[in-house]
Every structure is written in structure tokens, then in C-alpha cells.
Length: 142
Image (cartoon, rainbow, N blue to C red; front, side):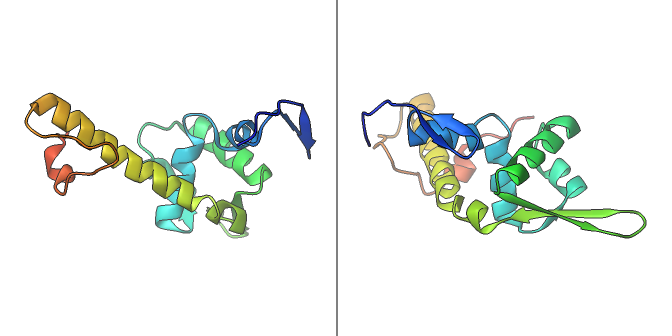
């Protein structure tokens, strides 16, 4: 990391540090979820993605996909047929982000382990660990 805060410019982006640049590209509520969905499912049609990303509206999915495509992380392939068919997938640049997404996923499991241990006051939690049966320990909403 660096503590230099001069304004930098790359392409159309202006930023003070590389973390800020990364957040300009993948920040927000939906872009990481879109990228994670594509990383887990490969090439996906729009409707399948909309059903697979809980809570996203059609408008936000379209906007996120357009921005990720413009920034070079997502590829949009249109098949000229009736009815039209459009598929989305990660580009090489998008695939280079998968280790970050995987790290976030693992951290989420670790944080769930922390929450479960805190709720139950029964287990000692060591930061960064994931309980072996965390999927059974978290409660389903409903």
C-alpha cells in the first residue's frame, strides 16, 4: 500500500489510490453479486441471471451489466434470432477478479461463524475460521 494521495488518471478514470479505482469499477450493491453469479455459473442468459440474483430489479441488472461490459469485465453476446437471445459471461479481466470474489465468499462464511458463536455463546470463535457445519448452523429465513 502507498500513502501517496496525488490525483492519478487512467483512461476515463480519476483516482487517488488503486483501491479507489477498483471501487469505481466494482463498487455498489449489485456489481459484485453480478460478477459472483457469472463466476459461479459461466455463460448466462439475462432471465436466468435475474432469477439467480436475489432482490435485483431488471433496471439495476441492466445498468450493472452495461457498466461492467463498458469497463471490460463482462462480455455480452447477442444471437441474431427470433426471439433474440443474449448471453453474458466474464472476460479474462473479469475472471482475474474471481480470487477477490472467492475471498469475500470465504470471509462471509467466517463472519457467519462469528455471528453464530456470538448468538449461542457456546463456541469459541477464532477470527478467520469457519465452522465445519456452518451451512447447517445458519437459519433459513422463513
